[in-house]
Every structure is written in C-alpha cells, then in structure tokens.
Length: 351
Ligand code: NAD
Ligand code: TYD
Image (cartoon, rainbow, N blue to C red):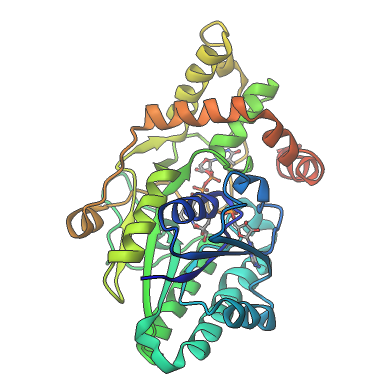
C-alpha cells in the first residue's frame, strides 16, 4: 500500500540512514524529509538519493505549527517517523531549554497536528517516535534495560526525551492515536556528527589532536551500527504492534577507554602509523556532570517478536566507519569548519 511518510530529522545522522533505506526500499512510498537544518542537519548526507522521485525535502522547524500543517495538507501525510531532536548530552547541560523546545514542545506540536489531520480515521495512521535508552537512567555493574525498566533520566537531554516519550504515550491513551516507540542504545557509523565520542575521536586522531576522555574512562555504552538501527526502525514501523515499546541495542558493551584503544589501534593500522601512536593522544579530562555510568539494552523483545538482531560486528562496523571518514574527508572538513571550532573551544579548552 502506498504511504506518504514524514521522517523528521532526516538530514541528521540516524535520520539520513532511515530516509535512504525507505527511499530505496519503498519506491511506492513518498518520503518527506522534514528538517530545520540545525548545526546537526546536513543535506550532503543525502546527496546520493536526493533526485529520486519518491523523495521530498522540506526545510521546516517542528516548533512552527503552521508549517507542519501545510506539509500534512500538501502531501496528504499518512504516517510520521519522528527523529528530529537536539541529541547531544553535553549541549543539553549548557542549554537545557533548547532541548525542551525541540524535544518536548516540538514532539507535542507534531502529535497535535497529526491528531487533527488524521481525526477522521486515527487508527489508519501510525506515529512512530524514536527515543533513546538514556531515559532509563544509569545501570550498575550488572543488569540490562528492558521495556519495563522505570524511567529515571539524569541529563537535560534524557529528561527531555523521557518527557516526549510520555507525551506519545498520553496521546495514545487519551486520544487513541496509533503510536509505537523504540528506545535505542548509542549508534555509530557514517555521517555521525563529530561532537559524539567515536567521530570526534576519529577526527582528532586524523588531526593528531588530544583525545579527551571524560573522568576515569570506565563509563560503559552499548554500541549499535547505525544501519542496523535503520533496519530495526523499518521493522518496527511496519510490523511493530500498536502501542508497544521496543528496545533496540547492540548486545555490545564497551568501557569508553577500551573502545578508544580499539579505535586507536584500527586507526594506526589504516594510517600506516607505528603501533601505539594514537594511544599517546589519550588525555583524561574533567568529567561530564551527572555522567551516567552504564547503559546496556536487553533487545530480546524485538528479537523474539520481530526477528531483528544486529547484522554487523563491532570490529567490522568500526572499521567501515573509519574507512568512511577517511574516504569522506571533505564532509568532515565541511562540518568541522565555522561554528564547530567555537563549540570545540567552549567545550574542551581549559577542562
Ligand atoms: P542528530 O543530532 O544527528 O540529528 C537531528 C536532526 O534533527 C538534524 O538533522 C536537525 O537539523 C534536526 N532538528 C533538530 N531540531 C529540529 C527542529 N526544531 N525542527 C526540525 N528539525 C530539527 O541526531 P541523531 O543522532 O541522528 O538522533 C536522531 C534521533 O534518534 C533523536 O531523536 C535521538 O534522540 C535518537 N537517538 C539517537 C541515538 C544516537 O546514538 N545518536 C541513540 C538513540 C536514539
Ligand atoms: P557520547 O557520544 O556523547 O554519547 P552519550 O553521552 O549520549 O552516551 O558519549 C559516549 C561516552 O563517551 C560517554 O560516556 C561520554 C564519553 N565521552 C568522552 O569521554 N569524551 C568526549 O569527548 C565525548 C564527546 C564523550
């Protein structure tokens, strides 16, 4: 059946992989990429598919209700996959309100417009909200986040995502909208903006700059290759049960310092450096306030119910990611010129 799907945040890191997958896999769907093109949005991420007839880009902000209404009318929107967000924890610590506006109010705006435009047949339309495992807070040495783990967000970013998840739930319970939510662990891969750990460290190794490890470096994250996340989103969108939540993760926990050492070793090999060269760049710096110690997802439900599991091992995915960054040096140069330099200085100088 043909669909007209808004994908919000389609010019960002994960969104661009989802847009690419849907545009290529579903020629009968019209994919409308709704994105405000903030510092994190980049149309270069989609230049391989932007001339396809089933792809449309609309520059719009999810805080601009009339603009969203116009897009719903113009494209007879049938479904929404909502990824647009402010996504970086460190920025949320500096500017929490930006996260409240986009992540909370922007999500409620989208829900409101969808509810109004789909009022005649609410059950015939799906609102799919993309969220994060960070809403569950921090784990101790053991245990995993399941779909029933209580929400316990610690950063302004995770608090804003938790709030948006609750609004999606409330719109389902109160207005009977057909919603589905997925909460995913840390992604990595091509087009990742170099403010996050892996792309920032790849960039710094190329530039022979210090690798700023926060605190004792023993914080743990569960890493998933972004293309595997996009495949999970495809599955949840088409086969996920109405009203359900699905946790998505890599079954792939790494302490930051171990990950950084693996990254250094792979980079040294690819750059033809002597063993141990990049590790010398590791510099421990002042910790992030409220830093969550450990995230790890139990992805059994999506595995058992929808048959999803990661297809790429971490070593493979990391190697492909490094190759992509080395082969796309102009992409990296473009996104790290201008304002990025100011960001970097304010975040890392004198820390
Ligand atoms: P990103 O920061 O790379 O991209 C966000 C996109 O949203 C950008 O294209 C930006 O221009 C757009 N955007 C921001 N504010 C907007 C606004 N007000 N109106 C319209 N567009 C706006 O983010 P990402 O890492 O690709 O994350 C995408 C989604 O996935 C987010 O909802 C995030 O919470 C979630 N998520 C991310 C990760 C991760 O590891 N990156 C893990 C789990 C969940
Ligand atoms: P990040 O990529 O920002 O993702 P998140 O905070 O959403 O998990 O950070 C991943 C981990 O790496 C986290 O424990 C913080 C740490 N980190 C550093 O040690 N140095 C850095 O420069 C950055 C950006 C992150």
